[in-house]
Length: 137
Image (cartoon, rainbow, N blue to C red; front, side):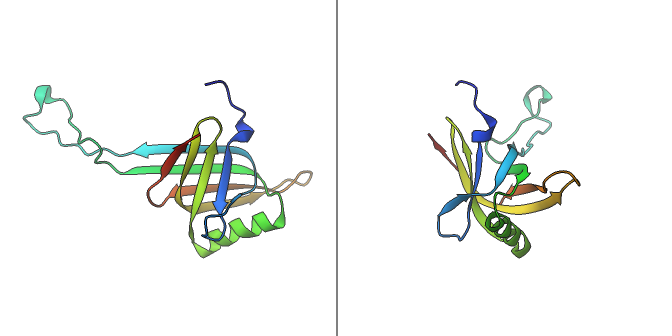
């Protein structure tokens, strides 16, 4: 796989819950991280006293973070309302030439910042809230 432009990684939100996705905002930086817990079943009879884990038994999670500028008042209002209402919404993370990760996320952080000689910026954080799917492109 050739190098990808970071700006092509998109974060999209199902704004109404009806399956219609819109780009969340003008993200300048974004990141998705996956994690999986383990279930340790090691006991005194474990071979060589090495740790033993149960395959596929741990808790899986994904977190998404992004920062940038809102493209318009509508995008700002939609994201802000999702946060203040504590809604679980379906989000998509579109990774170019790789695929789309989609599923329910909760918007867990929304921060605004600005300097006297620059634009207002924001940062947001999402935590997975159910099963995610991956669709290869």
